[in-house]
Structure formats: structure tokens, C-alpha cells
Image 1 (cartoon, rainbow, N blue to C red):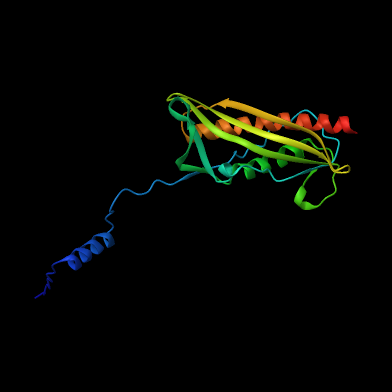
Image 2 (tube, helix red, strand yellow):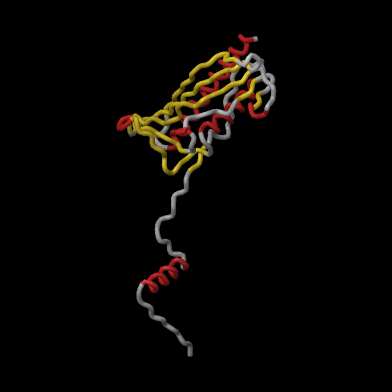
Length: 212
């Protein structure tokens, strides 16, 4: 007849063998890890601003302080400790915010520039150079039920021919978050960013027109 062999083991080695057998059988040792959600500004391009940029323009890379050079989506609990910045653990940006904003700027300025917009790194001769620095990009949670996204940027417009600073300005915008979580932060910060970009295009068009 059939012969069944039973092997008895004792001690840690037996425990490990049993554990390996259970895992091979598809038994989970704990809950599956929750995947990290990755966000950018979405597939929709910025709304076209009803102005035309006449002068040629080169965009420098958007710079940011070290605190904003990671891909973390950060928030402040203003009602508890507004001085502390914390990241969402299960969500992040697809790239550091400055890189996402630079891409957004090229899209928006490209739609509004009569002569097109180049990147400063392309080495294309342009009448003006626009430098943007990201100062703030954070969700501020004012209560368990209310939050807003705050974005602040500083812009400098350089006359490339004269190698002089033509104008500079600080832009700030905030938008209410539809929810007090990472998706809410993404929507609020994206909307605030687009509001600043629209102002930035109008300001650049005005300053370059004055300089002609």
C-alpha cells in the first residue's frame, strides 16, 4: 500500500521550516502594504491667459530651498503647531514641486508667447530671462475640517541684452482644500499654482512691453 513518511523536527529549525511551508502555501504573514499614491498637476493644461507675450523669453529652472527639494507632500497643523512641517506618509509628488512648476510654466508661457519660450539651458538667444524661486508650497490645516494650500514664488525678470534686473515681484496665492488629506492638498496647491502662473504671465507681458 501507500507509504507516508512523517518527519518530526524540534527547535528553531523546525519553526523556520514550518514558516517557509506556510508561506509557500500562500499564507500572508501580515497585511499587504498600502501603495504610495503619486500625484502631479493633472493632464489638463493651464487655462490660457488673454495676453500675448511679444518679446522672446528664456525660462531658468525653478529653484527652491532645501526643504522643498524632495517629492514629499507637506502640511502644517496650524491649530496644533504651525511651526512644524510634516509629510504625508502614503502620498508624494511625481517630482519635486519646483520641477513640476517649471514644466507648468513652460506649458503656460508657450501658449501665451508669440515667439515661443525656451529653456535657459537650451542656449537660445532671448531678449529676457525669467527666474522663479519657490518659497512656499504647503497645505495649512486650520482645523480637522478645514485646510488650504498656500504657494509663494519670487520672480526676477532679467534683460539679457543689458544683463540687468528689469523687474522683480513676489506672488502668493491660496486655495481652499476640498478635503483635509493628501488629495485635498494636491488640488488646492495645483489651483494656487495655476493662479500664480496666470498673474506671472500678465506681469511678464506688461514688463517686457514697457521695456521695448
